[in-house]
Amino acid sequence: MYEEFTQGRIAQLRTEKKVSARDMSLSLGQNNSYINQIENGKSLPSLQGLFYICEYFGITPQEFFDRGNLYPAQLGPVVEDLKNLDQETLAHVAALVRRLAQHTQKA
Image 1 (cartoon, rainbow, N blue to C red):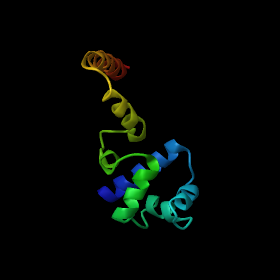
Image 2: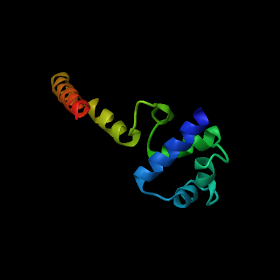
Image 3: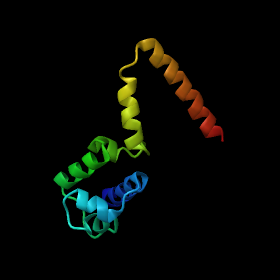
Image 4: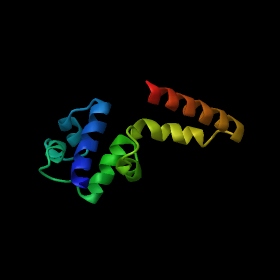
């Protein structure tokens, strides 16, 4: 269950970042087929390897495994920015986001 999710999540994030499996593998200091082997189910990253993969994408392990967060690399910085807003501005942004989410669900 988590194995397939991990393979798919890495492939999704890598594709969004527009980087090849080979380039990502080398950037992580691994052999050139490291990410390809993970994505194809031939191996799994160690816990330390997973931490490096998360760091590579600029996300936390919690964000990586959050199935409800389809775009953790994009959402994380937005959440950090939201933390800096005052209460009134945050309420306005929250209302806007709710309206956008409702509109998206109807479409």
